[in-house]
Image: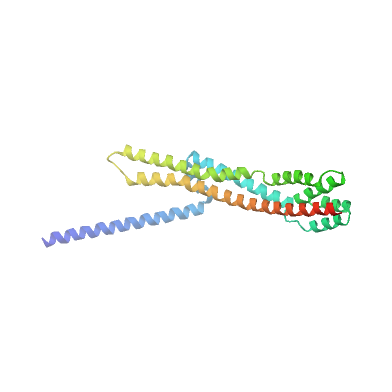
Length: 244
């Protein structure tokens, strides 16, 4: 009897030891795979794109489009000179002193949407027209140009998580179909493998949406500052034209 017990204990110990060794080997192989992926760089993402299917491809295309729009807007804002405001006081002083030609000369030399809007107002007053109407017309066009492509970023930020969720739902359906087809030979790896592939699309969708929405908010805040500056400068210019 004692020999049988000892034999059973030895067998159990051997099984536990074997399991620990197997788990350790699996963990080490997982670490090796992660290190290889890190060394492989972007090329290791290709299998993930393949597993994610067409939804991931669409999301990656939206990501490229979003990045292109962001870079385009940053370059546009930099060229537009949105931070230039020092010329406004000089222009108002020129107008108050009756030197409208001098004010117009300063505005023509300044590269800024605010300067172009004020120039339209000064030239409108010189031509006997309404400075306020010219300022409203040109100012609306300038702000509209700054806000171009904002709708694209908004659309990308809104639909990317939904596309990712759609891919996840489709992946979960496929995973449960495979589980059903397995019948009595149910392997948990089938379900877990299908789930992580399904969740991949959600992760990619969020990764595309977050930069698009964050960039859109930052760009809109910059346009809001231009709008406030334009409103203040226009009011001062109209008042100066009336008092001159």
